[in-house]
Structure formats: C-alpha cells, structure tokens
Image 1 (cartoon, rainbow, N blue to C red):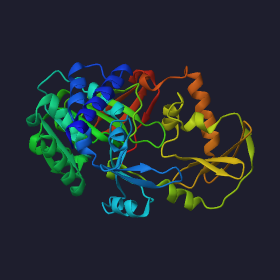
Image 2: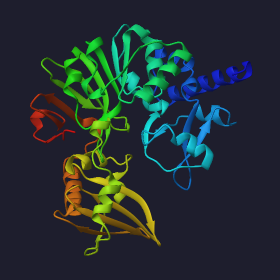
Image 3: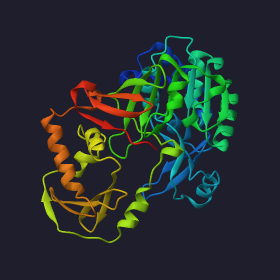
Image 4: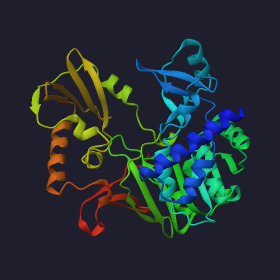
Length: 394
C-alpha cells in the first residue's frame, strides 16, 4: 500500500471511530484509540459481498471500492460453507451461493462487546472465535499480546488470522480448538469474549474464569438472540443480564441446530385452514421488535423464514423440528395464517404476545440469567419473580 493509500486508510479509520463514538457504541477513549490505530484493511484483503439477486460476489484489495467497504460499519463474510475455494470460484463466475461460516463483524457490535468487558487494564482475556484476527488485534492493542489468547475451531481460518495478525504486528496466543471447551493452557481468565453465539453458556468458560470475572457472548436463538454478560461465580456458576444492545453472530459450530432449509423441505407443499390475524410476522421475528426476545423464550426451537414473495403475496414461515409450521401471508395490510403439524404454533404465538403485553411489554434488558451445573435459566427481572424459562442446551 502506497503512502497516499495509507493516509486514506488512516482518515477512514478516524472517521469510523468518530462515527462509533457519535452512535454511543464507543465511549472508552482507550478503545477509540484502538479502532483509530489498528488497520482493519490488513485483516480483510478479500471478502464476500451480498449480491442483490442472491448469493455472494468476491471483493479483493485490488478493487477500487475495497478500502471504503472495509471501513464501513458492516459485517464482511470471509468464508462460505467452510470451503476456502469458494472465494476464487465467486471471483471467476461473478457470484456464488453459500452459507457464511466466518466473517469480520460489524465494528459497531465489536465496539459494544469490547466496552461490555469493562476493561480497566491488565486483564487476561480469552477470545472464542478468532475469525480474521481483527478483534484479537484490538484486544492486543489495549491489553498487550501476552494477555490475549484466541481460539478458532477451523485451522484454515486460524492460519489466515495468524498471518493477518503477524502482518499487523500483533502476536497473541493462537490455537486451533473447540471454543466450547475454552482454552485451559492459558487459563484462568479475567474475561471471556465469544464472537460466536451459543445456545447456552459452556460450563468450561465459567470454570476457566476467575470468580468475579466477566463473560460476554451472544445467545444463539432463532428468535430473540442477543448479547449477554455473565459474572462468574464459584463451582461453575454464574449470574448475568441480557444487554440492551442487540447482537447477532454465527453460532459456535456445535450449537448450530437444524437448518431452516431442511425444516421447510420436510414441511413440503402443505396447506391448512386459512384464518385472519391482527399480528404481523415482523412483530414476532424482527430484531427491532420489542416482542421478539420474549417470542424466542415462549417458542423455543421455532425457526423463522421471512421475506418470500409468491405472486402478490408476501409469505413468512415459522417451523419447528417436530413438524409444526405456520405460513403467514400479508396483502394490502391484512394478515392471514395457515398452520399445521402436531402443535398450533400461531395460537401459541398469539398467546405469548398477549402474555407479554400483560407483563407490561418487558424489553430484553429486563431479563437476567442464572447458571449452575444443574441448568441455565432466563428470568424476568429477578429469580424470585416467578417468570422463568430454561435455556436449551446445544
């Protein structure tokens, strides 16, 4: 990169950090300095960009828009279907289908999670999910590489991250490992940061975190995902809270669950009695809906498929692995549903919505978590309040 390009990259970094600060995602001056000084472009020499007609196009550092894209507040996918050959294929063909299996997260959510760690200086951190290595570099900038360990289950992803980190001048401890098991060789940790989502908190994370240390991760839930912060207790216990900021990450590979495409295929070309409903599917499934987090608690295992259009009708689905399904259609502001299978999922959805309203329409930050070897629960307000839901294990 020439001197002019380096100066441009620095201007773009400064602008990105300033935007994050203006949005309220970046308040700590130490983290702002990290975002201003760690070169994200060294960690994204190539990536995938969504194509308007579906699939992915390949972006390279030789493309004229590459640097501006790198420093935009966007998540960039760096691997599809755990297959590193897909980037070259997309480059040759113009685009390719595929499911994202590794990425560089949005700088906004990275800043929110780093702030949520409540770093004071000198803490020892385990990062689960190395990805491109950019987040590990931010941690190294703040804490020094000796205090940072980062693991990824994919050796090819880790190899690329190691090269990126070396190029940027950061040398944390890197290891190919199943993140669900933590990383015992450099434990204990003051902080654990998982840049992948989990259906429940892995107990090894608690075991490897000092009492009073913090774990920040996201819940992997088809509905109602979000950021959580756990304070580690003794004997694999912990208590925490759901954070107000929304966060969505690819799941830890062991926590993925059934694919929505397979579930829809099992449902097949089905139909049932069609009835009107006042409840729009966006109220149930949109991350911006205040009800969505509660919907995920009331409908565990239910997966949405939204945004399909057949003729003039917009179709949205809810599907459960037990074969229960809902087809929700909207036309000219009116909503209708069909449902089938062993359960009447839409009836359950409407009942959950009425219960949520009766409870005062609680928002995600009103929910808390308790964890011990016997189970994991989400509570509304306090455990003594009586409203609780057990987290499903992977």
